Image (cartoon, rainbow over the protein chains, first blue to last red):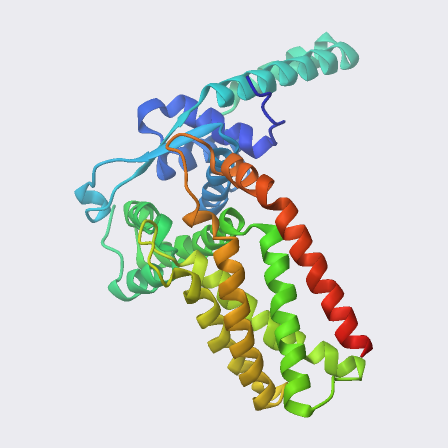
Length: 125
Length: 211
């Protein structure tokens, strides 16, 4: 099996959004989930499209057109799903992020980690 | 509250979004539409990204480089035919870049706005034709005769190279293979061919300039 490329932060966000949306992952839902994950940073819909195309080209996600719906003016959605390569890439990114977190917590101390954890927990949404 | 997007804005967006992703992007914009201003803002930020992404997906850099060389050579030869001598000054050589860029822009635009799955016998001609048309915009910088001959020459030469190296969208594709891999696998066997062709053109260009 081919080794997936290293993911950029935005690519990680988009892949996570697709993972959480499951069968309902398309432009709008992916964008709103990415916006939620990337807060307080603003994310444009265009940036999500560009990243989705790139991820599809890399073989990390695949897409298909769904049936047209009236709320979209009779237009179809392009739905996305994670491929095995994408799941592996996301898993590797999560492991790396965890390692980074643990290393930082080790260096800056347990108090900092506890305080940061509390602050994280208080974050709305 | 969801609203219907303004007709005029929707028509402009339909024209600007490449056909390959028009359906889903227009649908997403309509689904997000809460006000006319919101629709305009969404479209303004999304459409340039969609076009750029489409260009990145369809452009094969080695083939584009080859086209750039072919087009520039066409205008150089056109200047030679029109004036009876090759342009000597550096400024004149640089000026030929303007119509060459116009032709290249036409070739890229024709591929970006090609309808997917509507491959016709004349698809290879569409890009060079649009490019030749766009070259006439640059007739302020370059004499009309040079533009005319250059556009005609580049039309012939680029159409020929397009037959040898068809656009990515026209290459045979598998159902579940990523596009980038197809792009790479398609580029592999022809990489030697394009290298030879590019070198031959470069040598021709140098020999023409020296004579």
